[in-house]
Image (tube, rainbow, N blue to C red; front, top):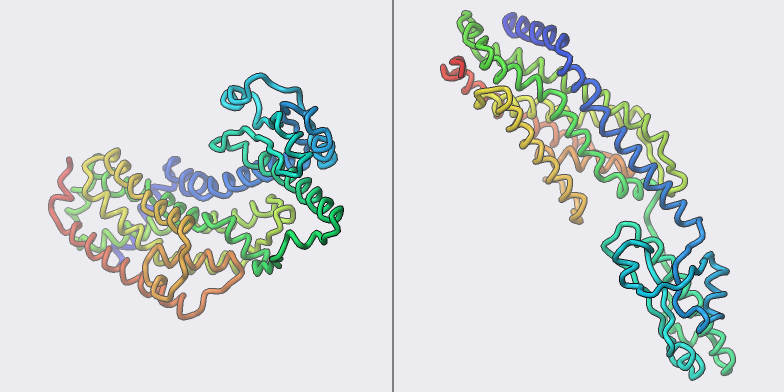
Length: 391
């Protein structure tokens, strides 16, 4: 083990002097996720709150045909703007988010008691359309329900006649569970940090050394190749763990700048959360280090290995997207699947749940078994003479 320790200390010491590796492991990898998350959430929330509180100003065509409707909308925060000649062109050219048009038939339908039509022009593919259109629809529906109730009263009927079924909503969500839904992408950032934290080191210690023609002199020493591999894997794990630790600490700090009260959610990213994340991710750190080293071993140059490992990072992206989009009911066996078990466990912690000792044990045991198999395969590659031959 002295040989492995010597290689480990050598690689760690040399790469601490490598500015690119240190920046990636200490700053770029672990901090980009929390910073990006904090900025995106704050910008999105601030924009939505401003739009919700600001007066809704939209062009209205034919406002004189429904003065009572327009007045009712004014009282709810609507500010009618001058009419436009072509509402379709205005919406398509993004000159207005939406256009309200009151047709000529509105007055006749209103007087006869028939449903009075109004037209709302908008483009649902635009990102800034949803909230204004939803607000305007809610205003019109409120006026419609109120007017309908008054008509029933005028005819001696109870307003409840038009609502034979009353839905009583019983929302069972909690501030923590709503936070879990909003921050469901959070586990991906931890996985990404592990990938990025040791990626440059894995590339440099294998493909980089082959390109610099320093791998062959290293294997000339009377030391078993697996001992050299063990030292290199240890160095990669140190950088990955350092990145993960920084990221796990940075997210609770970033969460303090997220307006959770305005969102009606609660986040508990305290020391217990950080510790459990680190424990859950330990097998993945070793597995990723072995996988990155294996992939880099088949590369003949630094750039080629960097390309392969960049593609490899798409795997956790696809899994995170699937878990975010598809409704997945957690089962015990899922914790035995590396990467999936870590993401499910962190998500459970976010929603205020807990990872049981059995689930944690399953996740760690299966993760370390797969990591050991990956290291065994990588060790076989290190026994090959082709690895020592420079490209």
